[in-house]
Image (cartoon, rainbow, N blue to C red; front, side, top):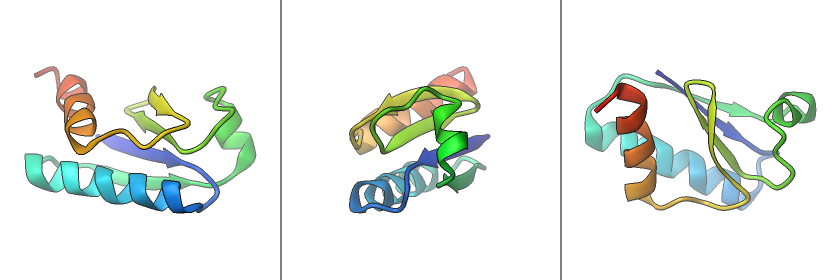
Length: 81
């Protein structure tokens, strides 16, 4: 599983990366968490406001930091659970 955190390194982007890492750890899931800071890459997902969260190529949230439970739900959904 690949989880991408879209953003330029702002405080919210860092918070989202931490929430994603915590969700993966608590669920015991193997996942690669990647920070995407290149504007061209972020724009591929039509994200106008960061941070953004992408799980296995699908944009799940943009412009906000989803809760830990939300991120866990996105991860479980990507697993087909």
